[in-house]
Length: 126
Image (cartoon, rainbow, N blue to C red):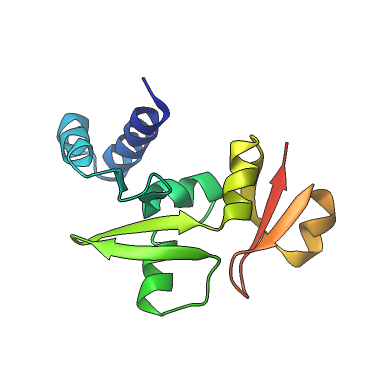
């Protein structure tokens, strides 16, 4: 199973746990019909990027709606939000750094920090 399929399965588990009357198979069928990447392989579904970065659900949807200055490109296509992260963030993730949202006070504990927005600081470590 590739990473995308694994992430979709985990996401389907989350949805099934939250809504026990919804079949995981139905959720997976729906998710598998959403194009995971568009135009460029660097654009991914927002909820997948949110999971990678340790951000809350609908983070990028809210940023898109509120036109927040962010270190990413956000694109809405067919009611889906896609995200292309800043090159520096992509590079750290490809170098197998783990990422999470942190407070400024925690920044000394991380190998690298990047401000995604003026209010969101990401910490990276191996």
